[in-house]
Length: 173
Image (tube, rainbow, N blue to C red; front, side):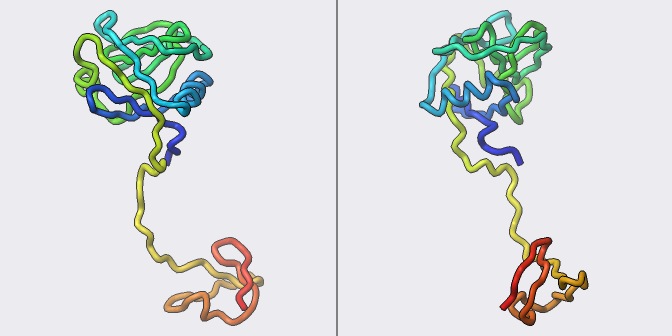
């Protein structure tokens, strides 16, 4: 599971997508700025493969030659956010990638001339995959290392003493 702090949200025309942030100083700084509130970035097509918009502040850069694909989110010249719906190779600082969408979905998401993209902090719990609680029988051992049979027993049924329960020492009174 990736924690929520690794994500930001982008909303265009009422549709919201998740951007999984890159492990870069600029991506962390972008997240920090967004904690102060959402921003709206006016974005325009450039080159037939990307949308570009100016951020209200500069972010640190760590440019490197990158071959982009649809969904990549990059920083250009320190204050321009670039979202790709095609491919390009240039010097960018990675910010992240729009998750779980195809190239066609990215094109549709970014379609139109000038768009307004709202960037915000992902305030969800950070839980990506939920698993049902399953009552598992705990692994219980005596201090001598003998496994205690817990079938059809509860911890409260154990005689008083010290036990190793799921790898941690416990005192049962």
